[in-house]
Length: 468
Ligand SMILES: [Zn+2]
Image (cartoon, rainbow, N blue to C red; front, side, top):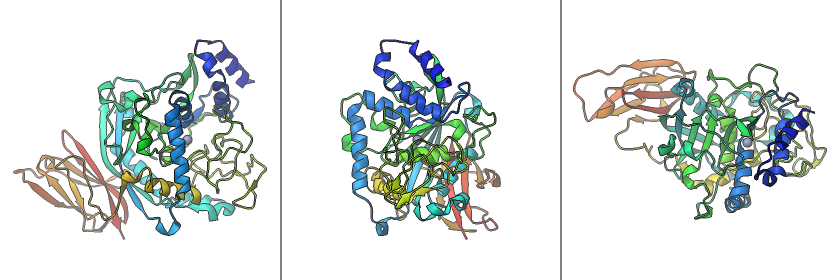
C-alpha cells in the first residue's frame, strides 16, 4: 500500500520531463521499495549504479553501449586460470568535506584499504560463514590495493545525483567547482569520499545512495564530443559514512527498525566490484525497466539467478527463482553471501570464481594500465616524496627515507586497528638532502601497518606489510 502512496505522490509532480521518465521511475521505485520494507518513512538505501545506469542509458546511449561492449569483450576473453596472478592497484583517496565529521581520519581510510585487501584476496575472517554448497564456487580475485595518496579538499559544494540531470557528480571531480581533480585515471583508482545528498525527485526523497562507480571502458570507446562524462570522471564515489570498519558515522537501517546498517567497509568492496566490471548478481531484474522474471543475468555463470536483490538481511533460506542452474546442475538458493548483492555486510563474504576471473580479465584488458607488477618500483606522486623500503619487509628491516621537505614531519607507525604503535618526532638540526630512519618493527606481529608522515603542510601515508 505504501508503494502506491509513494507512486501517487510522484504523479502529482508532473512536469514536462515526467512523461519521459514515467515508464522508468515507477520500476526504479518499486525496486528500491523492495529493499526498504513496508515503512516509507525510512530512507531506502541503494547502490547508485542503478541511478548511474539510468542516467547514462538515457542521456549518453553511445557511452552506455560502449560499457556493455567492454563487458562482453572481457567475458569473451577470459584469462586462463594458470595465467592469473596477483596484481596491485594504486588508490588515490579524495576526501571532499564540508562538515568536520566528513573529514575522515587517516586511520579510517587505512582500515578501508586493509578491508579491501582482505576481501579481494579471500583473507577475510568470515569466509568460514559461506554455506557448504557454495564453497566450491568461491573465488579469489588476487587484487591488492595500495594507498598512494590522500587528497583533502574542504568545500562548500553539495553533492547530489539527479535522476533528471545529466551529470554524475561532475562537481565532486572538478577542483574549480569545489571538488578534487582526478589523478591520472589510467594509472590510479580514484576514490572520492563525500557526503552524498539524499536522492530526490520533485521534492520527494527517494532514498540514500551509498556509492557508485564507472564500469570499465576501452579507452577508444569513450565517445568523442557527445557531452558524455570524460575519462577524468572514471573512478568510484562513496558516501563518507561507508568507509572503514572503525568509522563513528553511521547509516540508519533502511527498514525503519532503528539501529544502524551494518557497515564493514563492504560498500567499497561492492562499488570497486562495479569499477572492475562486475554487475549485481540478480541481473538488475525488476529495476530500470527490466522484467523481473528470473531471466536477467549478471553474465557470470556461477552466480545463481535471483528474482530480486537481498533485502539487507542474511536470509539463507531465500530462493527467489525456482530454476535449474546450468553451472550447478540443480536449482540453487540465492547467493546472499556475495559482495555484489544487497545483503547485509554481515553476511557478505565472497566473490565467485566467475567474478574473480572476470575481474582478472578486465585487469588484463580495459583496466590493464592500472596494474602494478610486483617487479616495478613503487611510484610516488610528484618528486621528493618519502620512500619506504623494503616493502613488504621482515620485522626489523623496514626503513623510511625522508627528503628534505618532509624532515620536519611527525612519523607514525599505525596498526590495522588504527592505533599508533610507534611515533617518531622530528629530530631537528640541519635539513639533509635525505634522511634515513629505521622503523622499530622488531617486536611487531606480521600483518598490515601504515606509515604516516605529517608535516604542517602535507600528509603522506603508505601501507607496510610485515612478513612473518
Ligand atoms: Zn551496486
